[in-house]
Image (cartoon, rainbow, N blue to C red; front, side, top):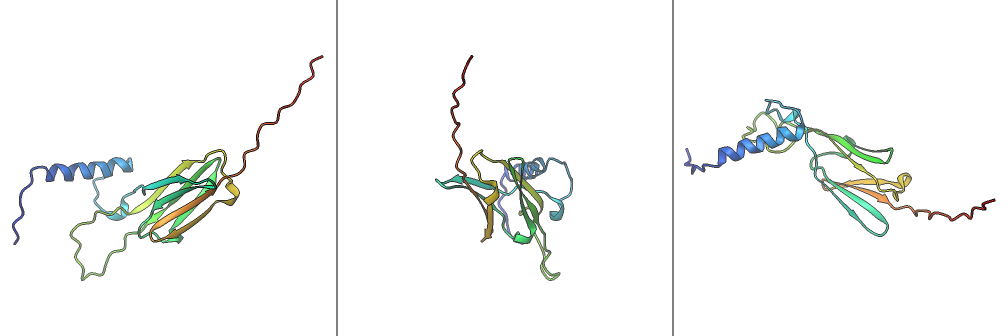
Amino acid sequence: MSIVTWTPFRELEDVLNRYSRVGSRGVFSGSNDAESSEWRPAANISETDKEYIIRAELPEVSKEDVDVSVHDGVITIKGERRFEKADDSEKTHRIESFYGSFARSFSLPADVDEENIRAQSKDGVLRVHLPKAAIQKAKAIEVQVA
């Protein structure tokens, strides 16, 4: 038996962590089952002269479990992170990772070339490249008034 120093705020921190996870799912569930939880992967968006880049952190998510779609100026990244139980000889003490389905949607800027969007997954990060299209400038038309 090991001696653990009592920290008065540890229990409060655990409660707040559980509450924030429940709140992010939008549905209250008393279950601690890792397979039933929903999560939102972190996403960073940056811009270069030629494109916008969305980097979504998807650790342990295979590319077959990710779907990227564009509809009405909105890009949606959705998929599932599956909970794989280790063999019966391994005893789990704590699971802090999120598992289950996820979805993130972002409005696209007007200058994105939707036909040439491409995505790649490497090292647990999904990179979605959104190339910029040349925006046609408004053309001035001379109106004759009679």
